[in-house]
Amino acid sequence: MLSEKKFEELIDKAEDWLHQHVSISEIKMRIEAEGANESEVVQLMNHVKKIYYAEKRKRGTLIILAGSVLLLIGFIMTVFNFHSNTSFQYVMYGFTSAGLLVIFFGLYDIFG
Image 1 (cartoon, helix red, strand yellow):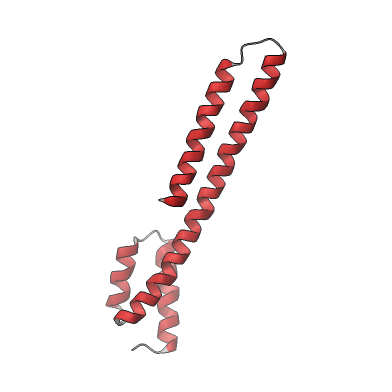
Image 2: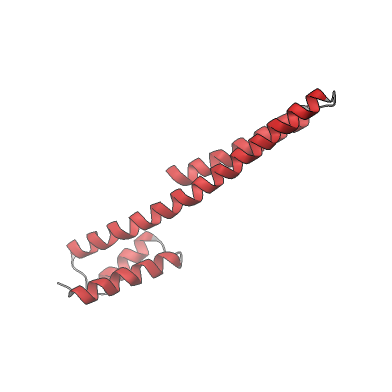
C-alpha cells in the first residue's frame, strides 16, 4: 500500500512517461516496478488511459477539421470553376479525395 504522497508522485511520473510517448504496457510495468499493488496499478492505468484517449480524440478532431476545410475549399473551387466554364473535374475529385482521406485518418485516430 502506497502513501498518498507516493501515489501522487506515481501519477505525475505516469503522465510524464505518457507525454514522452512511452507505451501503455511499458508504463504499467514501470508502475509495478515502483512498488504499487494491483488495485493501485489499476487506478493509475485508468487515469493514464483517460489522458491518452483524450489526447487522441483531440488530435483526431483537429485532423477531421482539416479534412473538412479541404472539402469546403474543393467545393468552393468547383463551383467557381463550373460557373467560369473551366474544367472543374480535377479540383472536384482531387480535393474531395484528399479531404475524405484526411477525415478517415482523423476518424481512425479517434476510434483506433
